[in-house]
Image 1 (cartoon, rainbow, N blue to C red):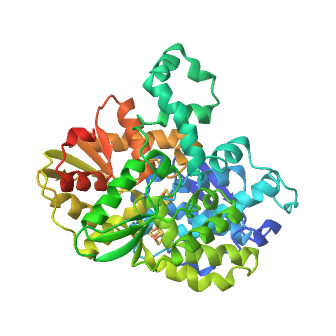
Image 2 (tube, rainbow, N blue to C red; image 1 turned 180 degrees about the vertical axis):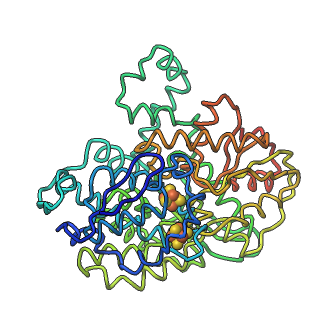
Image 3 (spheres, rainbow, N blue to C red; image 1 turned 45 degrees about the vertical axis):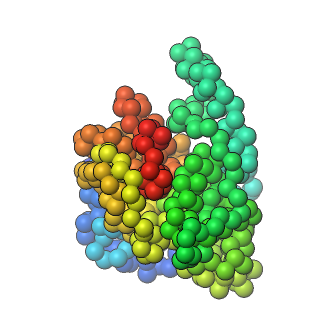
Length: 476
Ligand code: SF4
Ligand code: SF4
């Protein structure tokens, strides 16, 4: 027997020879060479937030790659313990940035977890019984996934309706009263957490129209992706993004038939709805003759740039019914650009309005690691007269938001959130800036918890404000 030594929490036992029939079902969509790219040098470990927090090798990129490969090889059963270490991964991909061997960690953990969750839905008992093949028994997702993750989050109209009473409750300050009286403790844990994460909601803005014309000489025609949760909670950021694009000579097309990017479903193993959403988005934009499809949410952008790869990964599992759409997918992926990336390529108009503020910029993982976009948002912010951008410590570490991670792994999300707030507040910022809706929610909640009254804004809000000549108090 061999084992992974875990400084923090014990060891994981490995058998020396393949023994488990489930080896033929888990990891089958992952080309095996991808595991072999890892030479176990360990240079990624200090960049991994979960390893930094726990000191457990099984919570490091190297350890997780070893665990996945051992399960695929049939040398390790997919026990609850193994599943726990893999589920604790934020999929932040900081390890990819740190790895000198070019290991594509995201392309290991993502399909592995999809299969792991699919297996759990088929037969939740199979993974804890080494040597037992999963039986094809259908298990419905739990209430949280059915009603909230799949039934609410991906639907922007339902989200908007769900936020109406929340707005009213905040306006009447009933939320504070409920907190004081302890009534929120009656909610199920995940709903209680969602309620605690809810920021102060801004007044509801009108929907973006289907088309907004460029100002001045037209330089490009772009589509704007508005998504689901982001449109319900951060529509003001979409409006700011559209105005910045118009100001920079772009016609902006906002197809109403677009939907959620599919990340919520894909990352929780619901492949079929994820595929449908991806197809819906490709169809929504493909006939618009666009120079680019612009995304202002890092997580959605990373997912959409990866559609082509995810299509082949998922359809490889499920048949070839989508093979015909392959060229559309690749074309679409080639068009997707983060707003910061697009503006710096286009050559942004210099904003003139002064905003006197110390800014701490938080790199969203799906921007800095997944899309390798670090410098562009900094360059854009520094164009604004009066902005003083301060570098923060541990900029490469995740804030703990990671999509729905702060609902599914609350303890680690809290630890990382508090750690990030410490790094941000060290530079005494007037505002914190982040390019991802999930990070903004997490940072707002953690800043508030720590007693800091600091607004969290999107780079486009500041840029738009400067173009308009507005005052910072409008946004804070
Ligand atoms: S993932 Fe890369 S950095 Fe980490 S152990 Fe493997 S080869 Fe080394
Ligand atoms: S994706 Fe992030 S949390 Fe997961 S192993 Fe890599 S660095 Fe660690």
